Amino acid sequence: MQSSISYALVLIALSGCLIVANREATPRTSSLNSFGKGLWIGDVLCAGLVLSIFPLILLLTDRFLTTIAIGLALILLLWAGNRLKVAILSEVLVFSDIFLAGHALRYPRLYFGYAPKWVWPLLIIGCAGLGWCLTLEKPIDVYTLGERMSGVLAILLIYGLIALLLRRPSVGIIRFLGRHPVSFDAQVDAGRYTPLGAALLHVLHHGQCRYRLRLRFRKHSDGSTESNSGNPTEHRLLIQAESFVPLHRLLERQSQTPMIDRLMSVGKSGRLSLDWRGAYTMRSEFAVLTGLAPRELETYGFDPYRLATMIPMDSLAWKMKAKGYRTVVCHPNDARFFDRDKVMKNLGFDEFIDLTDLKNRWPEMGAKDALCGHYVSDSALLQWAVDYLHESEVPTFLFIITMEAHGPWDASKFDGAASMTEVERYEVHLGHLDEGVAKIVKAQEEGELLSVLIYGDHLPGLEVLRKSTHEIPSDTAWVMWDYTVLDELESTKNQNAAEETGLKPEMLGGLWFDEK
Image (cartoon, rainbow, N blue to C red; front, side, top):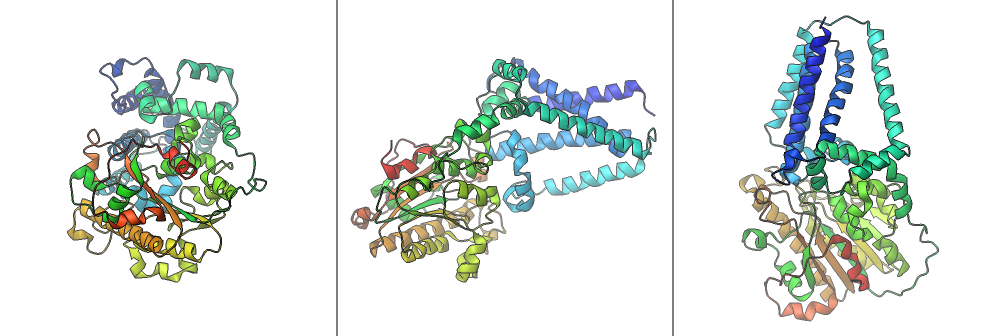
């Protein structure tokens, strides 16, 4: 049996380890960062986490040294997970990332595929080592199994009560938040309060303000009473191109998108200015569809689809419906990813065609020649979009969310990828996207009345771009055109469009309505 002094020393040591790890993960916003006035919030939370979690693990294992090892492993795992996210996405862990855990387990390639290969053997060895410690160490045997399980339930009950209290309106919490304001920028808040301190403040703010935010952004009309104020004569096609960016402009390589380059010369085009890089598709997607900057949603802004699953919201789709369009979204992936099956309904789409629907209703979309590796190729998908709109009997607003270029861009990405570099694999996908855009242009040349807007949702997480975070901005690109520019396109060869002032994603949809 361990003495009280031993327990106290272990708790102090583990708290110190977590505090050091949390401080090390704090973005260095200035040379005086380590003396910031708000960093104590993270320190206190670290100590509180250790004091509350260590007894729980000890009751579950009934082994003192093994519990210490598990505690150290959890601290190391949290620190390493944050380091990996920062390395790939340039953003610390945020409290809402926990809601993506289910998606990560359901679609592991889309999340865990970016981790270095050596991580997995190390995790296996670590888990095996902890299991070995569990078998070697003798139980403490101070309490019976029933008493220990009663203690576990009591601790969990306390956790639940604390969670309930934090969700209730509290003048004290509001005052505390007033003294420690947050910006809802993950890096800024983490630099001011440490990552864990910022997470605590975000959780407190969310608990106090979530109902206000839901009420503020709820669409109060379901759209059924909105008058049809238009008689559209053309289809409108919005394309969110996965990880699309004109890479040749960033790395001085030969362009793999000659058609898109020409369209940028004759249509409207420019930079899409994003505050995130390498991921967070849902932020770009939400901003384009709703006209809202994610940060306007405060704590919901880290993952805005958390809010959009709960309430109907004003959106580009609702505006299109009011103009007389039928609204359809197509994404060749599981509709449940990012909860899009719920989100798109709340954003006003009449129909959601996911991968299962594509394969069932259009069997050719599941054929090998329609795929590029794991996903439906952009070329095949955009040809499908052209055919779908051509056969549509009513003016349609079609939102395409491509999938082919999603990382990781490893040797198993598609047949022949093993002999290519990561950048070359990505460029294959750019070429397929360009082929698909060329098919859209061909349909327009043949008389299809079609207005098109395409944009990249975020930078690809290529290693060469991750190493140049400070030199290469997080901007992607957008281009908009219709059949009226085709005459100019005929006389335009591969030339780079002049850079325009960057647009924020929340401004893109307004281009169809002449909004500034």
